[in-house]
Image (cartoon, rainbow, N blue to C red; front, top):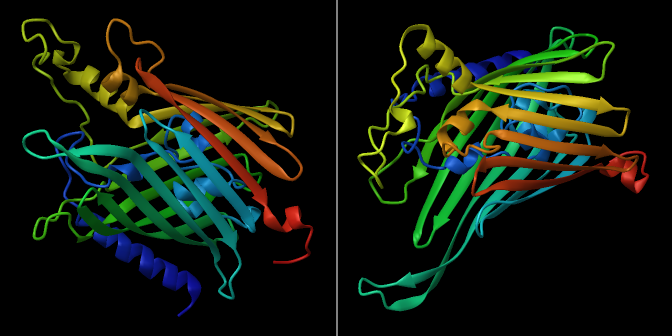
Length: 357
């Protein structure tokens, strides 16, 4: 079977699997493995926390959409570390490599460690400590179509979740497609993320649903100005992201902002904005990229009126040196704090000064 046909069959198979995912009415709390939604790259975090479309050159983008795996990242190695809230830390590492197959390939591993907890019995007596952690393994491949104007990609992601004595194993897939203009100034993409299931649930006989998501996006760089604009549309499988909180549980008699009811054009506009993540990059020469993002949904759901602060905003910078690239991103979620992301990447072939790997 020709490789384009093989990719088409695999992609449509995964689309069929994704089509079987039930769509929830609520915006959260209905799925397991929510760590799949976390931004593991500092540049992605700086652009608002999730992308579908970006130009080639950064292997981290393939974690968001396997169709962004390109020849430009061959032999690239990346390491990410994120200092999250409380004692939570997570990170990732990945590498793009050649195989005898006529496709691009990459492998990656992501982890999140929630810290160490005190274990007690029903009377409150301390019995010891326990920890909680989760792991994702990526195996990605991409293939060019239509004279390299279109790229399709697939990622297989087995994952392991260990929460105290409870363990769960799952298997999810990403399938994406990306269009690149010939001048490389414009990219548009669509990706179906986390289509799959729990292979082994935490509790025998009680399987839960995984966080399936449809994303679309576009990025465009101005031809004669150092700006790139990025728009990402998330959770497209759920047209309505609004919800109503009838009262503040700590003060039931007080008015609560989310009690507002939307209707007509206001409801359409509010839903559109909650699906949208906006980002911009300023390309300051060949060595420095400054990134900023705005996640409207994050701001609406996590701000504390009237002191909303910088919730939903993010910023970062990428320094591209001859041998390696360093990147930092900071995303504000809430008045309580922000996440700090650090990324490092290098081309192993160039770093070692070898002709081939």
